[in-house]
Length: 120
Image (cartoon, rainbow, N blue to C red):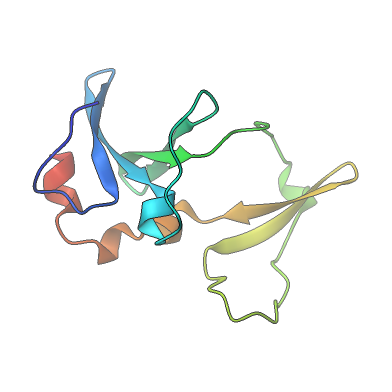
């Protein structure tokens, strides 16, 4: 991974993924959370956000799931003071319920000046 001096602080750098330059976004830094040292469990999850490929630094990955469309419900109205706009649904897989996130809103590419230049 190469760092870019002109990038926002939450963009940790870029990497070459099969010929595509991919910006790497640390979600802890993106949401002003406490910094955590990267360890053997830290992962980069590669996602498509619109027409762009982005890597998201996450603390750990416990499962990769395939949830059928008929097992996905609209997100509930949550009475909280936190921002829940990234939650797009709730998936049910057996007895498990998982929160589904909108990666476009999560990353907020449209609101992040300089990210397009970082990825170029």
